[in-house]
Length: 162
Image 1 (cartoon, rainbow, N blue to C red):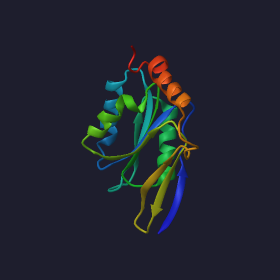
Image 2: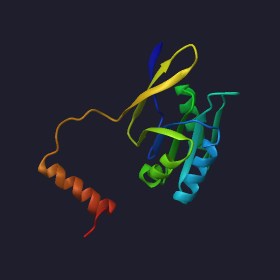
Image 3: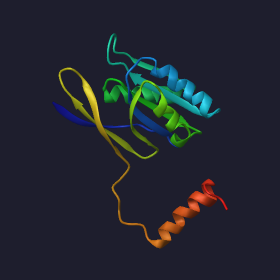
């Protein structure tokens, strides 16, 4: 068995969701989730088919994002894995709906952070063992950090106003 990490390309300002799914219909369903959940969002998605012709299936409404999703799937080489890259939307807008998609088995990450995917390869193929999402903690938040977090959520993002 060979272990490797694959650095995921994330366009400036974009968020990604990487997950595992089990059926070719994934591309159609994730497309529908995106266009009905966040009208106006730009996105591209790719899915590594793991049986039959074993093609990378793709779709989206932004050609550059779709090409980047395909490039990332090619680099991972892991069967039944998908990557969704989005602009003008956030994972929180679509994550629960994606989790409820009949074909989706698991979500590895939903982030805008730098991501490395840990992939194991055998004679049969490749599979995702996990992801490295962002960076290691540098400390514990102080009272000032807590106030800054709450300010960001309430006054900048608009969560729990009042």
